[in-house]
Structures are given as C-alpha cells and as structure tokens.
Amino acid sequence: MALRPWIYALPAMIALGAAVWLYSDNRALEQELAEARASASASAPAPAAAGTAAEPASKASDRGQRSGGLGGLLRGLGAARERPSLPEPERESRGERRRRRMEELRAMLGRDPGESADDYRARVIPMITAALVMPRARMEDARREAEKAAGVTAEQRAQIDKLFDDVMRETLDLTNQAITTGDLTPYERNISGLLSWGGGLGAILGSTQSQLGGILSAEQRQIIADQGFEWGEYLGARVPWEQLQPPPPPGGDDGGGS
Image (cartoon, rainbow, N blue to C red):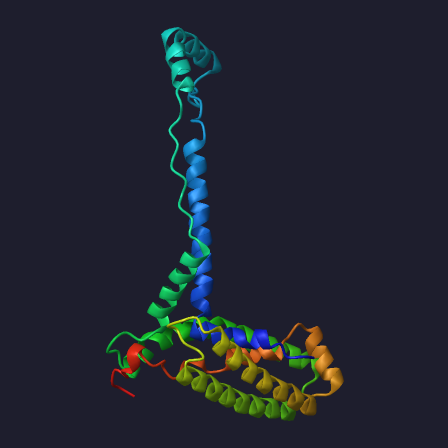
C-alpha cells in the first residue's frame, strides 16, 4: 500500500496557499458562469403576453382579436427592431490570472509591513484551523473504520500513533526550514523551491511507509487499502500546520514579535 506524496502534500499547500489558488479558480468559474447567464438573459426573447390564469380562454381570444390592427403593427415593428447587445465580457489572460492569484496569496498568507509574528499568527491560524476541521474529523472516522475491518490491535494503534507523532514533527521541521529559506513563500512563484521541499517530503513518506510495514501485516495493509483509506491523506490532515512559523515579511523586517 503505497503512500501518495501528492495526497500528503495537499494539506501543506492548503496551509501555505493552495486554498487560495483553489478559491481563485472557483471564483473565476463562478464569474464566467454568471456572465454567461447574464448574456443569455439579455439575448432571450421576452415571453409573449397572454391572458391571466383566471381569464377564460374565450375572453383571452376576444382580447387578442381586439388588440389586432395598430397593436399588431407596433408589435411587428418592435420585433423587427434590432435588439441591443451587451459587450463581450473581458477575459483574463493566463498571465493576468496568475498575477491576480499571486496577489491574493500574498494578501492572505504574506505578512503586512510592520506586522509582528504574533499578529500574523492571530490572523492566519484561525483560517488554517477552520479549513482543516472537517478533513481531520473525516479522516479520524475513516481510520477507525479501516482499522476495525483489518483487525488492528490496540498495541498496533499505539505504535502507529507514535510513528505519526514523529513524522508530523519531522514534516513541520522540514516545512519551517523551507519557509525560512524561501523555498515556500507567499511572495513569488518558486517552483524549484517547492520541488525541493517536495523531495524532502517524499523521503519522509518513504520512511513512513517502511515503518508501517513493520507494524501492520501485509494482509492488514491490503484490507485497509481496500477500504479506500490512505495513510498519506490521513497524515496530511493530522499534521499541525497551525504550528508553522510565519514567513519573513517582505524586505527582511521581522516586524517585531516572536
């Protein structure tokens, strides 16, 4: 049962900006959908006038006949008149959208000028915690169900918990180091730094996979996998990303605080 690095890395990217990117994508799609609906509404023909629901069909017919002549001519002229058209909505280029997302990421996860580390934590930590409440609860439930199906013993579970504690600590140390060096930063696109951090994360995951193999039997691991449970996904949700250190502010001014 292989741990999937990309699954494990997802919550880290939530903590460091992936949530912002996904939110931006979703908002852009919603904006495009709204524009499409507005355009369709503007170009749709107006519904034809009809008698009220309570009006007998005979009266509606008489009224329609009386509205002939001049009324019919006016309606015909109105139909022939060219309908106004709205200008095509402006679409962002790929570069414009990328710059906008980067600005949103910087505003949400970057430090403001003069903002202390404590002030930064007070602003950002509640957001990260709220984003992880539901994933953590779901993964705890999924783990209990998978371990029950696989017959995991209380002793095995205690060993797994200890392993996870060590892995989470190592992951936080790796990520804090990447933040300090700028490999993970909300101020610019640093793909090489992100890949470097991902390589270190992959090494941690490889070691975790090997140690899980020493705790659970092959049959237990297969049963857990058949349940649709992913250890990497569980670890990613459980890492205390709230404990990550704040990024340095632009310009190197630490803004005071700790």
